[in-house]
Length: 216
Length: 216
Image 1 (cartoon, rainbow over the protein chains, first blue to last red):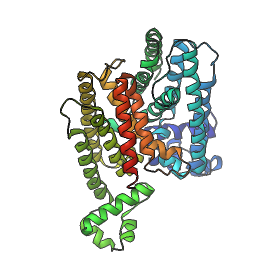
Image 2: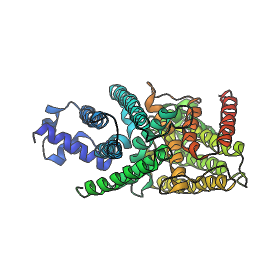
Image 3: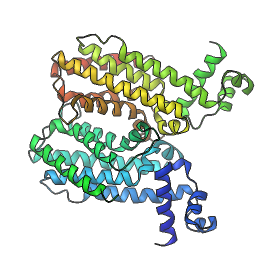
Image 4: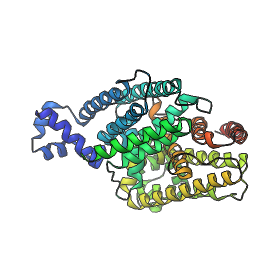
């Protein structure tokens, strides 16, 4: 790994562990045993590091929702969208814990997050509509139907990290917490999904989550 | 209003407008045209001001969920729980925008927030169970039934402020945004509520929210 990538990786690790606010370029350089000058050769400041990390988040997230969306969407593939989206949120959890502060400090990041969110809602809605067309989901109740369900799953997904950190005594979070987040998210979808489809999707979540947890 | 209350009120107003992080004791004293010494006579530091404001939030929130819970719970009263809880979140929106940062800095506040959350989830679950006993709600699907629905409504309620602030170009939020938050929250409950009960409750929300919005 070259120095630039090592800096990015260490910044992500430290911010995930302590929050973006608590970590500066000094801590990152110290942790790597490199000089501040070496770090500044690659990045102007902490904000630039965060922007480049956000590129990685965005790329990973867009991959999750664009790969493999041809109909019909079976339960394993449906579960896969959520499973992999929780992998992404876990990998970049520092961004979701202190999101509003990060965005308030950086207008460019803010605009990009808003675009990602708009794109995600459109795609989450499209996936749900496809599952309905396939005959495995009924039209959601409420004024905005599919759109509202997409937004509720987005709200749970994007706030789950913060919820767990707020709820645990030392604000710690472990990978297994992503499993309970997915279960919460599925409970928003459950009343509209065909019961067999729902059960099959949850079995995939449970199995794949257990398997991937073992990797750390 | 005495000076102590004026300080609290101005602190809440400034933090609601600019976020808790951007506001210090200097800005609060300046805005009131009082000396820092006068402010420090009443409060040791900004953290103490936030703790006292949190007392107010907690009192208001516990009032919402304890007043008037005798069965049966009709649609107007059911809507009222959510209506008034969104009033509370709006009044103390600075707390919900940057919650994790506030709690990370103050262990006592963190513990109190966790207790309030646990109490809220218990009460939200009890209200839903009562509506079901009254014959106006079916048992929610998913592994944890009523508990899971209570948690999903809590997640939407406690994260709605942040979601709106993140989603708007200048991170601004207006009181009318609370109306769309309530509508999102009701879409979690909708599939389990008796359709007539749901419609009646939403009519109350729409009407009372429009009325209270006019007050500013």
